[in-house]
Amino acid sequence: MSVTWQDVQAASDRIAGVAHRTPVLTSTTVDDRTGGQLFFKAENYQRMGAFKFRGAYNAISQFTPAQMQTGVIAFSSGNHAQAIALAAQLLGTKATIVMPQDAPPNKLAATRGYGAEVVLYDRYSQDREAIGDRIAAEQGGTVIPPYDHPHIIAGQGTAIKELIEEVGELDIVITSLGGGGLLAGTAIATHALCPAASIFGVEPAAGNDGQRSFRSGEIVTIQTPKTIADGAQTLHLGNITFPIIQEHVTDIVTATDDEILDAMRFLAYRMKTVVEPTGALPLAAIFNGQIDVRGKRVGIILSGGNVSDKILAIN
Image (cartoon, rainbow, N blue to C red):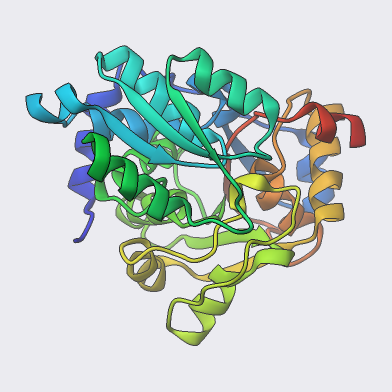
């Protein structure tokens, strides 16, 4: 199933007035350090603290009356969980969320706070997709996966659409990469609005399944990576996201946990904004030299700001 620029435009209309049109941040210090002109789309200021709200609301808003009656089921390490829970609350349907038992406590608390039922599992020994399918079979409900769904991908593409509308033509666009929903949606919208732009995804060095998939030409599945970037602890790209990434993305690069922490510190201390580890991946890849932005206008999606107390203490 393909996702088009028209789907992103339609998603933009659906979420208008509900999702925040998040601010764009700039910094002369980061521009001087990198040699580029960087524009940060601050999705850490989005409702529930991450870009995921865009896709979640776009997906649930298209439910049939029968689907609204039986509710939504999702599985997530945290941000998709919160996004689905909040979108379901706003649209008047129930949500059941499968979450890892070691998910950041703030993400668990927020998901429950939005009214969702949370089912815990062990991310290192259990299959969250199988658990979600079992719940759907037993209780009814529509499963909305965190990234491999056309309505999710289209919704995520609205963030870069807004950024380009505000700042104009970009030479390079960079997002974090987990399962590929944000990168795929971003790639579709960027290709439509800035067809000459280079597009990069960044994932944790400990979990470079996307990079390996991109370079080998087939989806690579890995064991759950151990990284502070919990939003990118995915095992593989999606059957929908991967072909989009293959078609539109320039390259996929990585950053270590230490490099992620350095980028988080910079964003906190110099730009006065709190970004979670996954959201700091793009800046980490620029700082570690894997993406050369000298002389370029660069769009970066700061994907979220839901940082655990433990990670804040490390910083």
